[in-house]
Length: 180
Image (cartoon, rainbow, N blue to C red):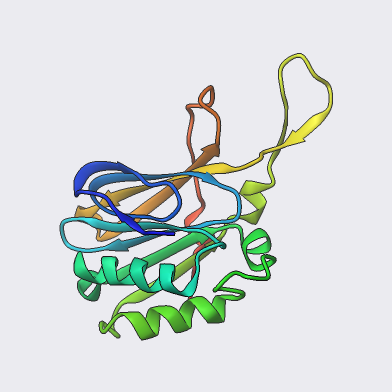
């Protein structure tokens, strides 16, 4: 699959295999097994939506695009996604947090950057009762939103059910992010 690099803009929406730069928000639609990645720089977020189906070449292209956008200057990197679903894919390039850490260490020269990861398995597996039914149903996927807080030197993340009818976002608890 060819990695697509989006033109920089304030608000991005990046499906799988896309990389982009956003100065305000980035939405990663339909996270079922994928990881949403955002890097904080002084004036923008560097963002990508990594699929468990990504090949070694896809990963090389993805991280080359992130470096071309200034990835070596990112002071903070955030990775959010459902560990259980992603790591269960036998052909996935990342089968553990250790694999993710190894990739970031190899791909970026800024060894002072802080790396944070969030397991969104619980949010991805949220159940709700849909109108007109009595049987709980599990979300098929979630949308993840990253918001740049340049004045606070951070990015905040929210999620919602992947559905056009759902418009309310829920903030991920910051305590769920762990250093890696």
